[in-house]
Amino acid sequence: MTDSPQSLPIQHLIEPHVQDLGGFQARRLLPSEILTLVGPFIFFDHLGPAVFPPGKGVDVRPHPHINLATVTYLFEGVLLHRDSVGSVQEIRPGAVNWMTAGRGIVHSERTPEAERNQSDTLHGIQTWVALPDEHEETEPWFRHHPATDLPTWEAAGVLFTLIAGAAYGYTSPVQTFSPMIYLDVQLAPGAQFTLPSHYTEQAVYSVTEGLQIAGVPLAQHRLAVLAGTEVTVSADRSARCIVIGGEPVGERHKWWNFVSSRRDRIEQAKQDWRSGRFAPVPEETEFIPLPEEPVRPAEQPM
Image (cartoon, rainbow, N blue to C red; front, side):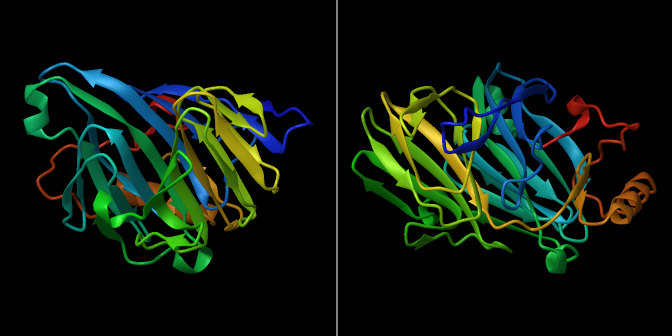
C-alpha cells in the first residue's frame, strides 16, 4: 500500500492484500492500513479468477453480518446465495445480489451443484456498504437484480454498467441507503472517459492492465483513491475498471464480518453469534464459528 505521486490527482494508491478464502484467492483492497472507507464502501474484494476442477467449488459456510449491505457482482461463474430471511438465489455475470444485513442476517455462498459437474471459473467483485446511522438496525432483506435491469450505455468505445447509485444521468434500480457511485467500465483500445467529481469520495480499481489516470499508467489490481477532482481514465488496450464512491457515512468499526458505528454493537453481535441467537439459514447445517481474537485475514469470509 503506497501513497500516490504528488503530481497525480490521486490521494492514495492502494495495493491488494492477497487472501486465501478456502480454495481460491481474493485481492482485498478495503479496508487497508491507510484507508478504511471510500464513501460508504468499507470492503472491496476482487475474487479470482479461480478455476475449479469438476467436483470442486466455493463453499462459504453460513456466517453473520450486521449494520451493512453486501453487494456481489460477477464477471464469470455462478454462486448460490442462501440467507436467514429465506432467500435462495443464483447469481450470474452482470447481475447484482444486494443483501442488507441491518440488525442481523446470516448467509452462505456456494457453487451450485449443477456447476460442480464440470470445470468452473469464478471471477468477480464483492463489496460491503456501510449503512448510515439511521439505517444500521433496519430489518434485513435481500434483492436480486438480473443484468437486464441495470442501466448500460456506450460512448466512444467505453461500455458502462451502473451497478448501484447514480452517474452520468442514469440511476440504478438497486436500492441504496446513501448517495453512491458503483460502475463497471470496459474500454476499447484508445478509448477514454471523464469521471466528474460529483461525489466527495471516489476511487478507480484496475481490474486489468492497460489503464491510465490523467495519462499516467495505473498498474493492474490497484485502487486509486482520487483527490476530489475531475479525472480522465484512458486505455491503451482493451481494459476494465471498477469505479466506487459516494458520500461519507462517518466513522465505522469493523471486526470480522461485523461493521457498526458503535463498538458495543459489535461486542453484542459477537455474543449473539457465539450463543446461537442469530436466525439460521434454512437447509444449511454448517456454520463458521466466531474466530479467536484477533481476526486473521484468512478467517474473513465474503
